[in-house]
Image (cartoon, rainbow, N blue to C red):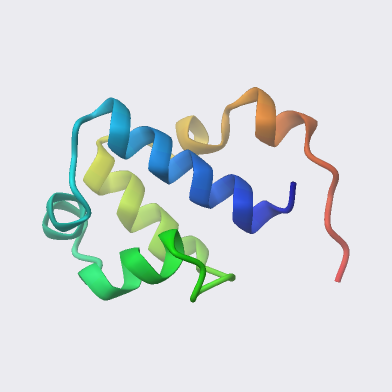
Length: 80
């Protein structure tokens, strides 16, 4: 699985676990609903770290906690 897919799946999982809508995440994070949707539905395949940090803030977690999963630890590194 590529990094984009891991980020997308992690966000979807966190939204589901927190019973949070895209709109609620957008309001809490300061990231526009269209940007969140673009990340989740594949239009934006390279979300920046600042955007991910803002989303983490809206989810009430650190970047470390966001990326501290077995999926990210075991993912192959992508070289561009």
